[in-house]
Length: 124
Image 1: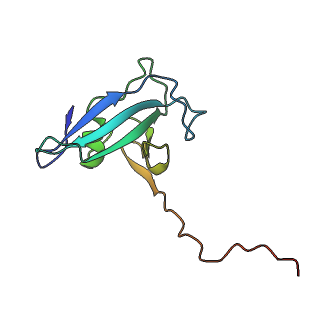
Image 2 (image 1 turned 180 degrees about the horizontal axis):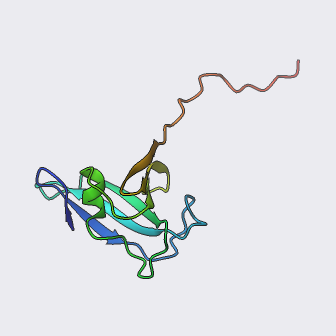
């Protein structure tokens, strides 16, 4: 567990290596289930997080207090990429760190559904 803010905390559940995901499948990420628990004790949010350090770590774990640093805008010691996925394996956003600070950040936006009708021509 890690402290978040306003009495909330992160619950981090390591995911067994080899989790088959659509995102970053060729990068061998370290994956974890990240849950946010408020003071009331009920989970309010959860994501699968994939951690990909610039230099491969022999222990294959996400560094302690990584999520506290990310969400509280603190300096991060390593060059790395964090991908946040839904439980259904849809990419939500990514954060890339270089030289201790956020180098890039991306949020995935879903397209609005098309209002055009998909009709097939009919034979007279």
